[in-house]
Length: 457
Image (cartoon, rainbow, N blue to C red):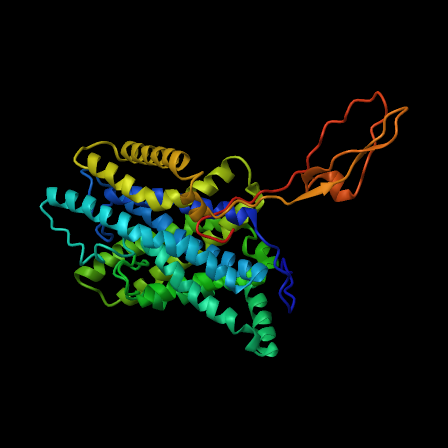
């Protein structure tokens, strides 16, 4: 019997999901892992301009293991957040959110971060007697290096905005039929293999059999179509958010199958298959390639489903470190790669152990990012642009009265208390008896959803 029996209509949008917010933070910070492993790659199927003196195939495996689900997960969560925001506050709120929190940081980063990255890379490649041409790598000013994500996020948002703008013109019967089909598919056990097979045509032309990192202002249509699929999947899931338990069902089994069974097989097929395709392609290379890409798709969707289930089961709080990292993660994404590359370049000529160098670079990078966030971003206009304004609980004025023995009743001045106060919420008033001390004020508690980059808050 299926875990969830799909109904024919979407459930009301429940608002923010703290577990998914926390998962988005982790996906953002995992960029330190992928970027940190690149200087040590050794198989030859991946390319990165920074090359360390010490390299190992394990770096390729670590990079591919994270690369093959991280950005896909991020686009799915971005689609979920955008559709949820549209359901709560309308399509105009989505447009304003993306312009302020994505387009503005991108406009600044392409003229500050992108040229800086080119200078750093050119310095390193010159020392290796290799010429670095910024024009070939997307231009001095453009959505290059890690900034491509913001640009493609804007490109993926545009179709959603256009669809929402004309949704009232879509026949109700067509919408109902789509909702029925979507709910059946989300709850179906065939969801993962079907979605995995769907990416095979899009990745067929990729040299490494993996999704490429785009560069430049001219969109790479195959890359855009690939990530648009994950963005659309997130938007559809937001419309049927009550089926999230079906996506994260048996999360431990999904993560175990992805990392113990699928990932090793996918790595073996991909590494040896790409080498064979480049050297002297055998007759069976097409079947080998299809199997490798299919396994990569299975790994991607198993990781996405497993992580959603894991975080909805164990990481649902939004306080403490989670709240702070939620605010810092967008800054870490924007500023982290230049800091990391500068440290990698400084250590590249030395034959240090890979694990030690990886840890040192990432710890120092994270320390610099958190220090700059705390001192120059968190409480400034930069933090407002990146994370949005923090929500402030509304206040209400409550009239009280004080009765003392032997005296006439005197009106007390109004008090302003949080709307979340239990007395206000319950409509309860009280009088203080003579001789009894004033009871301690007990404030109501509320879950604070920290603003997250670059999703609607």
